[in-house]
Amino acid sequence: MNNNENSNGIRAIEWADGLLRLLDQRLLPRRMEWLELEDCGAAADAIRDMVVRGAPAIGITAAYAAVIAARDRYREDPQRWRDGFQRDLDGLAQARPTAVNLSWAVQRMRAAATGIEGDPVPALLQLARTIHDEDIRANHAMGEYGAGFIAAGSGVLTHCNAGALATGGYGTALGVIRSAWAGGRLREVFADETRPWLQGARLTAWELLQDGIPVTLLVDGAAAHLMAQGRVQWVVVGSDRIAANGDVANKIGTYSAAVAARHHGVKFMVVAPTSTVDMSIASGADIPIEERGIDEVLECGGEPVAARGAGAWNPAFDITPAELVDVIVTEKGVVENPDRARMEALMAE
Ligand code: MRU
Image (tube, rainbow, N blue to C red; front, side):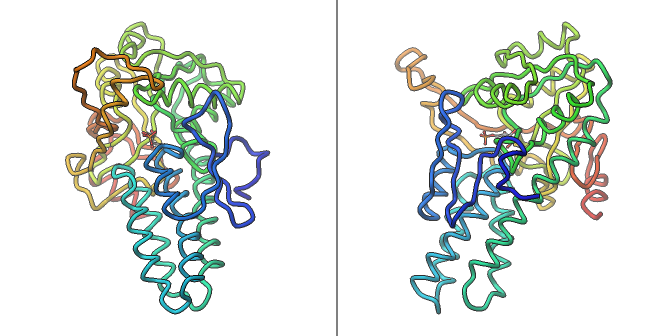
């Protein structure tokens, strides 16, 4: 599969003619504008500032950014390019703390650079393209595995955006929804708006509508009421990091949806490639949770929405304990009722 094929659905990351281009997700759905990244520092800024977001997508961006770093450092000094390259990679890895796909991709690029003689660009570009292609393939596999759990006539609720925009293409949670929709299994798709960045309202709704999949938006606080009415049988979400015991970090509000789902007998599915699984972290308690600026809460679309003088708290992610997760879907297979032993068995495959 060629990751630059536009015919195969929405793509937010492109490498063409030696340039890394990112679809500026901050502007969607109003405008489609692409940013061309000049250097590795610009890629780290783009990750931090949410031009590109979603765990697999920021990992893929970092892989291409490492190619840019190697190219620039090698041009500067073909003998000692590795010193600056390592510093550039350190900066990339620190751009956002929660999604482990970022440090996973940086680590893969770092390791590949170790054995290279001469110009590092061809080998590193090949690896970045592989990381991108592997992600798309994983999403299609997960789409099929996940859709297999969903009975015909089901309603599903998703949170945030775990779609093509958040990955190399096709999506994790939205990959399952795309596959289930294509298989005629879904009665209705609901998306939480996902305050404060509105990934559900702006990105998930846009993506699904591009594919002709009808979607109904609700404010995050309406999710439990939706479940109480029996309108959804599954909550399907992505993840930024899954700990060794199956605890799941994902967009703030995921945990509330999981608690409400268990209360109402609604099943809870997490869809993520194994690049999101961090077996070095024993439980969700040790996953670093990004806290973003309070203006994101006090304002909406740049307009103040809160009483002047109010404080705010803005954790970008939360932890859903493994016991609230019915199934984790990965490209290697699925883990029902996850715990440490089952996660170890999956990762050993
Ligand atoms: O802050 P974001 O938009 O990067 O958060 C994204 C999410 O929480 C996604 O659900 C997660 O990264 C999985 S994307 C396939």
